Length: 121
Image (cartoon, rainbow, N blue to C red; front, side):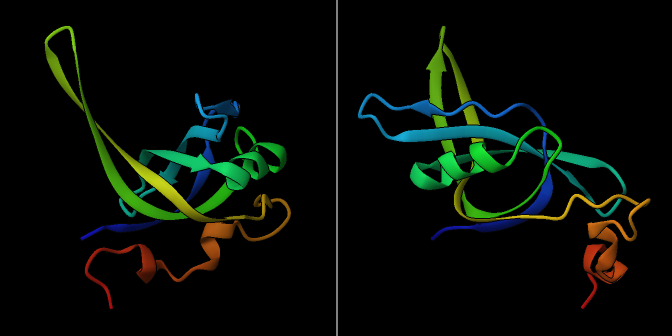
C-alpha cells in the first residue's frame, strides 16, 4: 500500500544535482507549500534521472513547482540514535507560473478557497 501526495509550492534553496555511486542523477530539495490555515509546510522531495536534471535546468530557488509522488520513509541509526526521514519520491511534476499580484492573480489564488479548506467537498 502506498500514499500518493500532490503538492504545489516553491523551491526553498538552490538546486544541486548529484549522482549516485551507480552514476544515476538524483536531486533532493525542499518545497514550501502554503497550508489552508495560512501557515507554511516544508516537504522533502527526491527526484531521479531525467526528471532531476530537468528540474535543475529549468527551476530554482523561489520557483513554483507542482509535484506528485509517493510518500516514503527512510530509517537509519547514527551514534546509537534512530532517525526517520519522510519524503516524497517524485513521480511527476509541472513548472508553474511565477506571476505575482502585480501581473494579475497569483497562481494559488486561481483555485476556489474551498479546495484549501479541510473537510470541504
